[in-house]
Image (tube, rainbow, N blue to C red; front, side, top):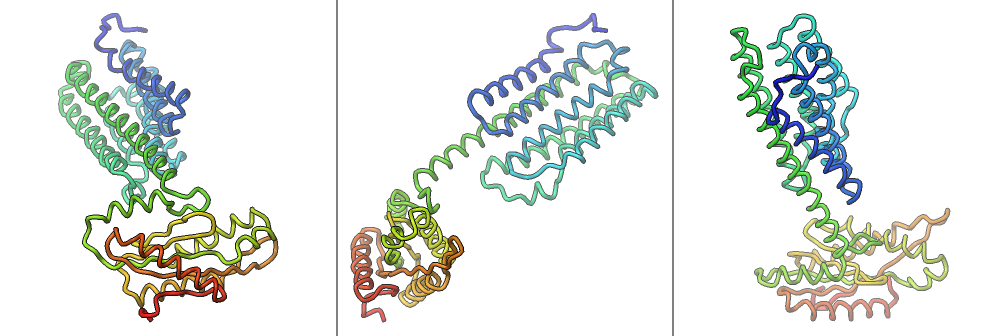
Amino acid sequence: MFDAQLNFYSILIPITIICLGIAIACLYIFQRLPRYLASYSLALVCVGFSLLLQTVLTEDFLEIVLGPLFAIYFLGCALHIYAIHERLHLPARWPVLISLIFSGSIAIFYFSAIEQQQVYSLLVTSFTTAAIFLHRPIALWQHRAKLKIDQALKVLILVVVFFIIMRAVLFSFLMQGDDPLSSYDGLWAFTQLLRLLVDIIFLSLFFNGAFQEVVVRLSQERNYDPLTGLLNRRALEQYLTKIKNQPGTQKAVLIADLDHFKQVNDQYGHTFGDLALQHVSQIFQQNIRSSDKVIRMGGEEFLILLDQCPHAKALQIAERIRSSVENMPLQYRGQCIHLTISVGVSFFKQSDEFERAYNQADELLYQAKNQGRNRVHFQPNLA
């Protein structure tokens, strides 16, 4: 059953792959790693276990169990591509993957136990593996990667498929003279070593991606208001620092404040108050350009920065926002509750002028409130 001529070096690569999988599984359990790393750990264990048994079993016994062993191997490949799809938030089609696993395993069993065509068995293995790795290729390639790591994962899939097919072509050519695969143990071991290196590269990309996600999440927690999802004061300070040395272009400062927010809060409760803040935040975002920014300054006060914006355009946007809030009531417990805002508008070019512009817009906001609310106020000479 077990190969008597077995040596340590022949089982080193499969055991290394299994140990990698177990180590990742332990980290997933104890360190709360992303779920796709759990899928990848199972993939490594399945592939390593299959390769280990193919190495330690005798050829006679291997012919009998090769089909089930390759079912485990193909399952590992399917879990591998599933982990990538999880990482990219793409749904995998398991019925398709299972059909590939089943058909590939049956074909390998046929060419190993019945027809005993090692070349055909190798070709089936390679092309089934390639088909699994090319699962949903159009959706995968059209997916817009948020991080460069994700783009690297997609490129590496193509590299793996190319490697698998080229290895199949190479060994099919070498085995044309009825030489068994065992005649090329050294070359085969080298390709297995390359496979291990590819697995390590995949692992490094997965961990790098997980780390970058943590960095992005922490940045969002630091720079975004948790209630509305808008930028906060810290993000505003970073933006002003960023534009400090940039050429001065006219920017508009809009300070908007919900009218009678305290009374609304007292009348309908704090839950409604939170919903009202979220409601107007969405309206703000719907009425600005991608280059503009909305910041929640605190309470019911918001600051809108309009980049490269002439006077007339800024006033037009401010009035559009005010009108949208007035004409889009908030539905709450069967009631249509109308909200309004007051807006003060000012302008600046250099970042060191921002404080002056902010104070001016704030003063104009309070003028709007004192003159009846639900209106936009700006410097008279801009009319």
